[in-house]
Image (cartoon, helix red, strand yellow):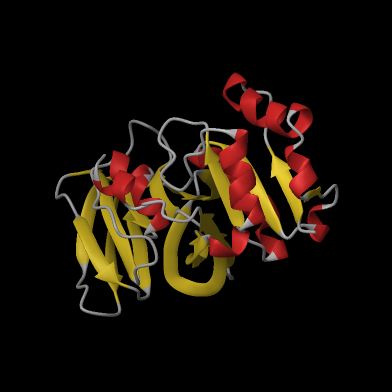
Length: 254
C-alpha cells in the first residue's frame, strides 16, 4: 500500500479535501504517512504558494508532489472536483504524468564579503532595490548568446519555466513551457526594459550602484548584494499531474 503525506491547512477552501479523508474513507485506498520520510508522494491542497512552501520543506525526500488546486491560479496544481475522482487517481497513480523540474543554484556575494553564499530556488531569484524609493544600477549577462545588458531601476528577475507564471509574469515577463531548458529574465521597472527567454546557462548580475537585496522564491536571503551568479542545477523536483490533464493550457491562457 502506498503512503501519502497530506498537506492542507484550515483554509475554508480546503475543507472538502479534509472531509474526503475523514468522512468518506478516502484513506482506505492508501496509507496516510505520519512521518514525511515514509511518504511515497506528497499531496498538497491550496494554491501555488502552498505547493512552493511544501517543496521547500520536503523536496529533500525526493518524492513526487501532487497538488490539488484550492487557490486562485493553481498553475502547477491539478483540478480535482470530488473524492471519487481523487480516489481513482490514487488507485492508478502510475498513470500520472511526472514532470521533472530543475532548480536554480545561485552564488550571492555581499559587499565586503570574502566568500559567496549558495542558495537554491524552485521558481526564481530576484535582486531588488532594498528600499522602495531607491534604485539600483548594474549589468546582467549570460554565457550563451546573451550579451551584456545594463539596467537602472528596481531590479531583475531570473526565473525557471515553472516560475515564469509567478513574479516574472506579474512583472510582464514571458511564460515558458514546463520542463523547457530555458530561463526567463525580466527587469523590474527599469529605464530600459529587459524581457528575454534564453537557453539554460550561467547568468551573472553585478550591482554597480545602489543597495540591493536578493530573494529566492519570494524569501529574502541576503542584503547589500553586489554580485550574483545563477545557473541551472541538478537539484530537481517532480510534479505529478492526473492522466489526461492539460496542465499547460492554463499557463498559456492567462
